[in-house]
Length: 310
Image (tube, rainbow, N blue to C red; front, top):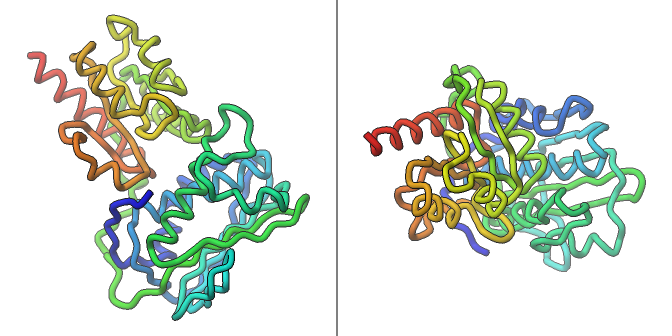
């Protein structure tokens, strides 16, 4: 599915540095991440949110392939040539290549042809939707590039994201978000609705560190049951948008009807959600999000809901 992208010129090395703390948190303490980044700038023209989401998805995929323990190597190359991939001819011009190598179990030959298909996954039930690699593939193709994979069973895999190299000046309005003081949760209770295990763990840990109390469910249907007819003591719902069954937008609309005093914040890594008709009036943040972005959105929505009830 084609997404509504918002491309801008970005320095890939800068973005890798910007999300390094997030990648460390998501992959866990038993996974070491090594970076091989050139001194010169590697510029691409791409949607920043989708690019960072693709990196997160590749890192999570690598972590899971290693069973949560091993080494991920992220290597950046400028002025690369894009080879022929899956029957398509080589790319014309210069590309920036981002290679993510893991020391995991590798990918069987029969699965290599299907790994970028939406909802295809070799993970167990409840451990992945199969949408991560399809997002990487869709973003790469829509941005004029591609993603290649090399794998040896028992030794690991290397995914290489190719994106056209760009000219011009990168956007310099980015400030490292971890240095910003996040808004304290003050014991407020958050119902987290997230079907992806790794993202759910990351979100709840982030909120716990900020002083919130959390309860995590993996579906909108389970969230409705948990909330009951009175909200069951929760101050706010924080939900993913794209989930099997009922999605986050439908959940927000159900709550607006049945529990109008319950504020909701939605999160999505898919840019097209931001342009969908009917999203107006809903609080929505892009994945990957920082602690400050998440806590600020929750506090803003709680304040808005309180003002509406006054």
